[in-house]
Length: 72
Image (cartoon, rainbow, N blue to C red; front, top):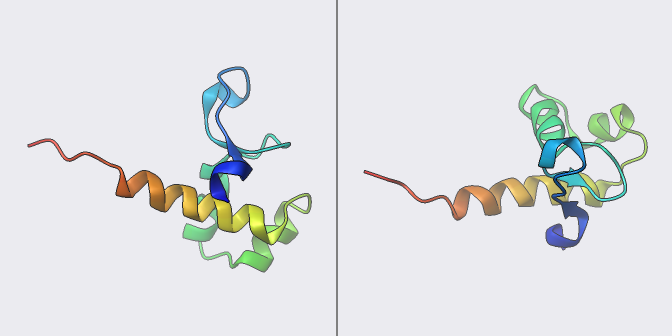
């Protein structure tokens, strides 16, 4: 589901992951959450988003970290 909501297009926001159909970057959503916002507050800040969009951003971050390769 997260894969359907998040897109990466080099022509939009310099290729940063965004919520499909918006120019809202995943990192902006995650920054709000890291700053103490709950999902409802994020939705109020970005009123064009739905709860599923915020959850997709979180899942995208989890998947990205899980796929991270550690170099020694």
